[in-house]
Image (cartoon, rainbow, N blue to C red; front, side, top):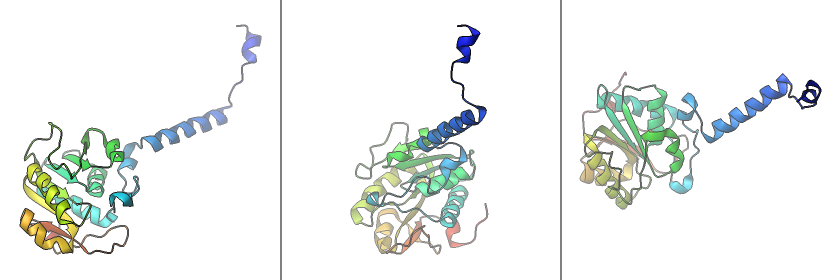
Length: 216
């Protein structure tokens, strides 16, 4: 091609090229949010049809700190239907911990190998890589306030945990939770980003920081 022919090829100005690159970058981020932003609570919107209600920033932080303290150094933490806690743990840059998110909603697959597809209706249908009693603490938040949902999720919790359980569910489930998992209600009251009709509480089966002030 001659120089004169080359001159006829349309050229983008540096401003237009920068704008185009910014557009493509935004599109990529929307389809696969990267960096720390993808761990922000709310980056994935609540789906009420799946009974999803995210914790407030303060509650997610308190539960994340509790999980860190309970798991111990280089601990393993399972977040079962509790994505807000998983997101806060990763937002805290705790790479020294192994943290997995067990979720039915496949939008959370953006978290790569740490995402485990989970359906409480099939409580033990888990990948081979998820070994029995391989987590120092399991944080679970059953999506529905029903005996059936808690009973099935309890199978998962008991399979995953080495001992410690942190359950977040309605106050009306106190008796059932104690019967199924041997947990007791804590003083700490979790809050959500939206006002819910039912009172929520936390339950544990160990000496918990949720009954006192903690600092991590």
